[in-house]
Amino acid sequence: MRGPRAGVSVSVWDALGLVLVQEVKTDREYPPFDRSTRDGYAVRSKDVKPGAQLKCTGEIKAGDTVTQALAPNTCVQIMTGAAVPAGADAVVMMEYTKGEGGLVRFERAAQARQNIVPRGSEARADQTILKPGMRLGFAELALAAQVGAAHLQCAKKPRIAILSTGDEVVPIDQPPGAFQIRNSNSVSLASQVKIAGGEPVVLGNAADRVEDLGEKIERGLKEDALVLTGGVSMGKYDLVESVLKALGAEFLFDAVAIRPGKPAVFAVCQGKPVFGLPGNPVSTMVTFQLFVAPAIDLLNGADAHPLPLVEARLGEALKERPGLTHFLPARIEWRGSVPEVKALKWQGSGDIAALAGANCFVLVPAENEKIAAGERVSVFLRKDVV
Image (cartoon, rainbow, N blue to C red):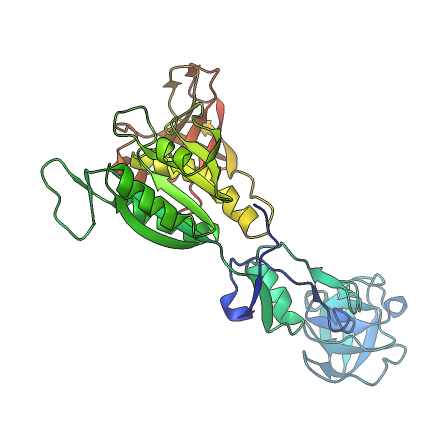
């Protein structure tokens, strides 16, 4: 399932979140000159003792061409980012000096190399600084821009087909009947696919009929991966597994020991990964983050992101049935050095409103029945809002 994927040329301005398929190398040393990290005075460190007075022979600002070496027993005013002249081996911060006519008085001794970034200390010339498989964030893009990589070869986003199922589901722009629901799962899944680095291909909804479901699944198998919602439980009209088996699917699992999301399935069908997620919205969202998002990383040719878990102090005691790992909608707040998290009241895995008020999930291990207030717990962050 893992890449490498075909590369497309993308402007550095448009490459945020994409996965690199090329090496990016430096075009010169970085920094290309000895660079001052402070506003102050460039000096020869051996000339500067507390109380020393040196003649200031000029100033150097960032971008100035510097050709003249610093003479002994002199200094030159220098700005942050400017090139340090030859002969100088230290920069004394402005705060520790005082101008007296044409002289500068120094309150402290100088140490060699203080407040200077040496030439080539960040990167050598022709050094590989970005590698294939890296996901491009703002720092990586700034690094590419620094070395003049205005266009980058990036993995073409994997196309992820999204198919909801169920006679009770209607399009979001249609009024539902008294016992029907709008297709919110396709909206959330399309958003999650985008966040994970894929391109959603929304196929709509399949009725609870073998022919319609089979036809739409075959359409989804033309893409890089297929995600279905609903139809994976044990009911009479839960047809996803049987239809996939008829199409030659090999199942790797058909249930997971979590709540919400127990009836999730994963299969490979006609060479394509297929995820069958529970139809209840919160279950759908949780199982996508646990199983589909890492798969999209692999389809992009990148390493799978680790689960975004952090540790927090539990604000209110919890009691859950043991035997399943629970992911409870919760809210984490940062107050002081240790974050605090509280599980929200919710009405089960169909309660989208509760999840919209959550920015994380409290993870309750399967072997735990009770967790006291104040104990440390693992928290699964919602990366879209935290």
